[in-house]
Length: 594
Image (cartoon, rainbow, N blue to C red; front, side):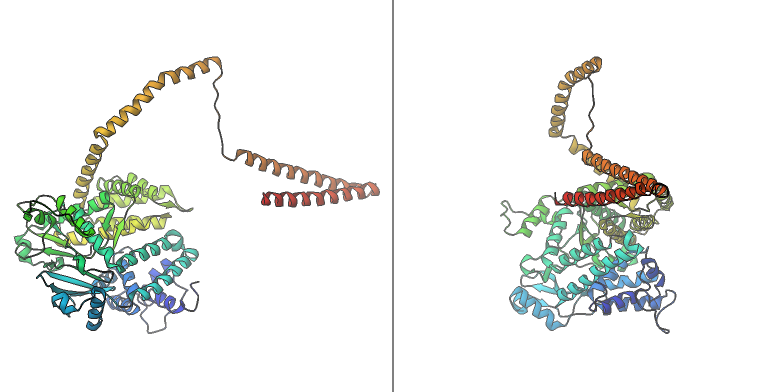
């Protein structure tokens, strides 16, 4: 129960977040007002402002890592929060207090079962990045390779377990008692968050994700994903190659003149479309802090394409570990290194990923193609197919709203189209019209929203619509080629041959029976006999009630003139009533036993 004493401080803190920092309208929309007391005079109430947004961000940090994760999710929801709050929450990606150096060293030595001096040639105590679940340090291995070491915060698992249990109770309460909870699958979102946090807390899962994405994106030579150092990785310590790049927000004007960023923005978009539409496994957190620009004049780790080009071995030894086998496959399937490569993009931090089922993947492909081709009615139909209709859902009004939204965004100029924001608007419209969409679609919108921010930072006039349209056509062509391979064609020919062989005989049988008047059809309805028996039972009881009412009325009319006959009528009516009650009770009891 959410109102248990152990949850009350967290509940008051959560509601206070959305009632005391200029977000009273948000709280009202989500049904949070009234759960906690009104803010006292002098507290941060009233309209949103930059100061209140800053206070809101600081309060999230004070409440702990789970609330920081909540803030990071909200930072990608421009349909829910004002712009000033979105900008403040984006700084949560890097603005978290550091872990004490002694605890960092103790964790590494405990996990890797060796002293720091034996493991590394050099280890920098000053962190190069902090996050809600851990922090990153630069180091150099004994063989001279420059790496980064991510260390998990101590006791973070226990703290997150308590917070997730509370969020689960809160989601169940809001689902049962608020209009927003009825429209949004809050319990499903919390379960999805729980699974995502469980994956993020096991760095071995992140290591496998990084290796899998390095293999999946090996056909994009301008995308660099650092290799995982497997021997230096456990469930609480993750070691990868170090990227020497600059954040996309720090690209100098001179670099923009000297280098072509349009090509790399298009390749990044195509890489994400491949993850979403073909692999069904995509990086769900490509915010600007997780993407670095790698300039050609700076030394960096190699891509699978470069590693394949530099490999001069005649005989390749079989890989001994799972991650080594994935790397071998990445190099085997890597695209050739182009001669005109200028800049590259490096992706890091693969703790938050999402997977799509085959059916949902196909529906998302159709939705993206509908949006890129301005087919508003088809986009609405796809969303209805994906979601669950609530009782108040109005299909006509919903299709009209979606058509207006899609048309309005299609008419925007190049550089103004934001695919992630459009998808968020579709989700928001579905919410208000009574269509519940799966949580995976929100994660997809989050990924595309962040991807829009990255590509706009690289090339302000880049439009993803044309890339989506071209990639969608390529997917359709590839799928057609797969469906028309010799094996599929042979299977189709064999099945069609069997049908054509049997068809004349079957048509002859049908026409003979039609001519002789023997043609009949049979319709079977499941449980029809039970339904008819129930209807007959109801009819019998209604008839008995009418007969009983007639006896009572007749007895009442006779008792004034023929008292004896009227009295016997009432006695008979009473006996019949008792018999009916006993028969109904006994029959229902016997049915329950059966």
